[in-house]
Image 1: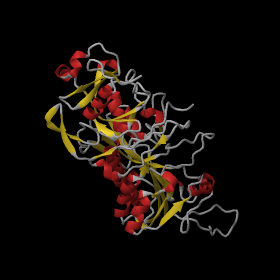
Image 2 (image 1 turned 180 degrees about the horizontal axis):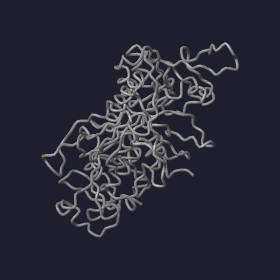
Image 3 (image 1 turned 45 degrees about the horizontal axis):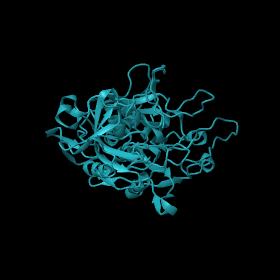
Image 4 (image 1 turned 135 degrees about the vertical axis):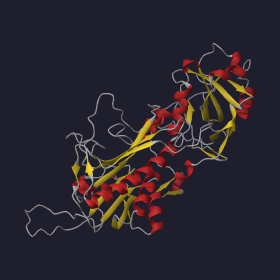
Length: 451
């Protein structure tokens, strides 16, 4: 089933690098991941129209800068443990990753030179993207690895080739048991780490490493939010706490009941989610914390102090972190409150702008960004005072806030600072409002944004 219409545009304005890109002509639903540059996570601040004394991030309009979170660390575990025998000699590590999260974790491992003798990276191969392959997409982890002088091994993109790919020596080896029927003795110092790798490693790779030396850094309080989008799902749900775990990585087989992200936990830290925190802020913080926990787990393994405990059982209410799909960026003012919409921007605005499909009378879609919930006590001070009783999607322009104000579900109001009509340039709210007025679509100071 094809989406409504064709819409493709980019949104990069001033200090606020958003990406508004959506192709509604494709019948397949585009899956979103969190592969972004960590440099976008620290944004300039400015004052909000609602309060001249407050400071907010510019990337997510009116959002407070990400503060250091309250947290608690639990590593190693003291109850129901499974102990790791002492290794003593530092590890030979294969680190698998690709994005900003991977890079932040890798930096902490690289700094912990007491835990490794040899460190290698396995990451995605370069991919040509853009029109006619005009742009080369290079893994940030590959760039980092070459910068610090670590060997980098590229993994093939094709599924069949990846299934049969094996890392080079020293990780691929010929076991010398002297007896073909004797159990294979794996190198005790070899250790595998993944962090936001984005692909399930084949069993053939996992079996090159001892069971207890296959580790994954996952940004959630497992078993909650198993899956590929834990940070986004926690933000979308409005949760107040999250965390990061270092877990054992086992073989995945749904037929045998072996799920993704279900391994025993070696270390965990609980982290408070600040109000209005966005994905880039949380990704940066959780990755740094996860890297530090991982380094400590490795030290504990070397000394024989590391302990592991199983994850709590899943319940019917345990949230799952499924991939974010393209359709989840579509806004419906009739069913979504202003707070739900702003949380959605916090969670996926770094990947894709929120879009009102067929938002204009001529059927064109409108992308919206820089969003904030309008406080109830401030509604009588602007154009909203004359719009009581209107239906969701009704909008007016407020000179006091220099933003478009849109009525949402549950009689809530959303402030929108930047908009982009399909196939047009990105505009500030006032410029966009003057444009729709010029089309004759504004009646008595009102405009119906949704259809």
